[in-house]
Length: 527
Image (tube, rainbow, N blue to C red; front, side):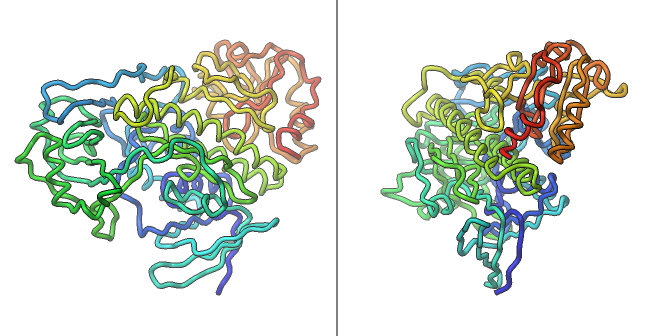
């Protein structure tokens, strides 16, 4: 059996795995991704990329492509009714989902996950990632120095041994790596079992001109969903629950699903055509499990668990998929730093410390939305957090942050350069060219400084001592903008240290370059 070496092996070729491949390759880390399915799933799953996720895709050059591939109408219009043809719809009783347009240079983009995955796969391959579909993980082991995996090409049965420095388990809710590692989960677990189909069906008579992105219906049974897959009202994703004690997805052939769809739409004479959901196959009906659970560990040795493999949340609220992409982004820069010798191996422990609490927050909020829209779970918690705070304001507490984030998600206006939180978006001019301060972050550490104090020299000395590239930008000299010091929480002699992922790692409010910057960075990088 042949053997191949790779710094990082990614198992799972959906949203999380493809995002990890893009971010790792963009950081210059060679990686291999294996996915057992023959191609990408043609099923939307996620509808909508929030502005924070768009900021990350903007970093790697995908913002224009996502805008082009998304829906023209970006307004999210959920409806609750008995059938789609009802005279009146009820809108979910939830906090206003509007996002502050001044919080980010990016906007919410209405794009389905299947379309987004096509873009991610193409960008990953363009950046040099080795992407292999129809390839299954057959065996897995790890030791102190790395991971040994056996992968099998399902087209011809040939096997190959892969030796990797680290493995990213992005094998989804049904993946087995987490179970194989013995990592337990917390949470209520399975909430519902559903079968889904993609259908061509002209349901415009039921809509009667009303905008509906997704409809939560009580007919033919509670929890039924119709989700628009185009803007014309003629292609839909239909989902209906079933009891695994009495049935299975095999009991729902396409003909039965078509009849149930007509009942849900309230259009008994509609012509319905069920389409395959996996290219190259005739698979038309898929079973999904809706659940809520959180892994107790995101890292086991050299294996990092990400996305749905680490946290499963109900699809309501559009939170799960965005959290998956952000998991991959957090992990990628840390793997790049460790593999590149800039950080110690313990930096990878901060992935669990930072992202697991975000997974818990996401789970709680998604459950709340599911209780209000679909009647799943135990109902709504005492408080739903405002959308702006969920998108922009979660904080990190770990060894990679000096000080740590606030105990609650913050609104964008509260960020103010707080350590442990995303650095604020502030419009600036660089050589007369307008941009966002967020465009300064990505591959390197960045030091923002007030106009006084010799921070550039301090950063140069620290970078030389640690062999670490540091970009330095001085307000009023390199960056022109309004209230830059105040909006970053520093005075004229202060400075702000921002990590490659755009989160504030350390802040010196107004002391001048008296701090041991090299010592600060050494601690943050776990060296």
